[in-house]
Length: 107
Image 1 (cartoon, one colour):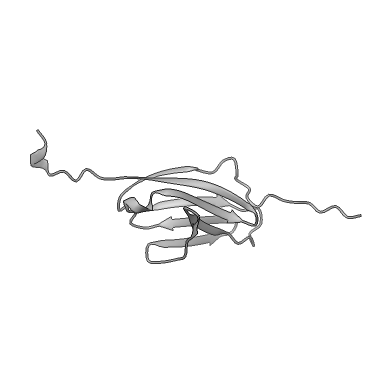
Image 2 (cartoon, rainbow, N blue to C red):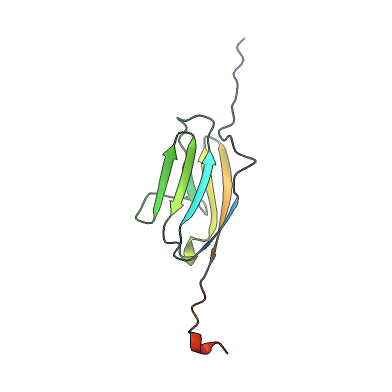
């Protein structure tokens, strides 16, 4: 009888940054660390799988996995998940708008 060790897919489950606050037009980065450098992850926003685009890209360095959002807009706020196997980490991005009020309105 053989014993199969089930390793956790993520090695930073208890220490990752769960909430990211970013201002509009800035860059947001979500990071997680996998137990095995060969592990593939998938990123989702509000349950929908993300694909790379001009403003969204995924990075993989060693055991580190990152989702980078360039030039963040209000619509990018929400819940993001990183999935590896049957495990997932949940992130929240809060987008803070800049004060666009003209100076002459301020009294």
